[in-house]
Length: 388
Image 1 (cartoon, rainbow, N blue to C red):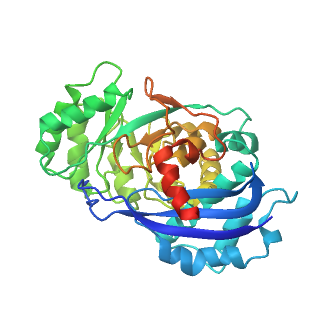
Image 2: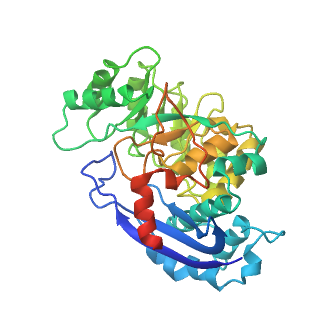
Image 3: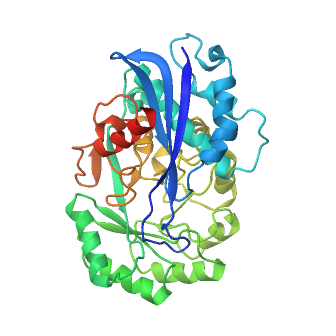
């Protein structure tokens, strides 16, 4: 059993949208194919992965450090004790060889993207959906295939007015979502509140709005928004300040007693642990958004979930960033609270397998081997170009 080749490619997912911090006009991601010598249905098993939007492609790091370490390792050191499948922990350790602790920036994205592809291959070799494999290995054996999803949108873009913003949000509701999200902090507080009022005017009972500042605010601005947002019944107030400013996050609990969310820009178990220790988050109402594809992959995400349990947090308080099928499988297999979704953006990498519909805010995962990329035609066509 051997990994024959690992290929990567940087692809564009550019869009004329922006949030409070960055625009996406030059956004890229890394697409990875892990080609093995294991045969299923007469063909070699190939695992695929890609990183979430917002962090750009990581091809240089993969080519120079992480892919060579896997391919240079003895193949017997990368398989499980039974010798019948690859061991993601051992492969992860090979990638991290000769790396110092700390510094969890772009390195975590490069390793995480390859790790996603490894898990896709591992589940395909067992001929199971990844969510089923995870439930059997790390859960109670019974995945929850019905997963809550919310529609991430409401970006700023040229020519956007309140009418277009309301039309966008109506389109998500019409497609079955019950929670929608908009960006804040890219306009004045006064204008952001007007945009919030416009969206709320089209929502019905049981439908909610989340807002996301993408880490834009200093403490005074974050407090001002906290006070202004308290008048609404929001699903959450997301990432008001710099992701590593745990004191700012902790201070806001004195000004905002409703749900907050953060964590999508923390890329290791250690950083996540510091957030839990020092960020003042409340396990009865707040949400954690760690994204496996950006934070060293599922191997590290499992460590993070164990840390959360030790600190009294339930996996059900995790709703990952990224809007991809990897986190959907983790949510179904390990009992997370749901997953982000991009109904219209970053295609073909966002969304669900073909035929999967959102119903009352939930999707039901189909029985597809691995992560299920093969069930999304436009996505698998792009992936197969890399592995051809």
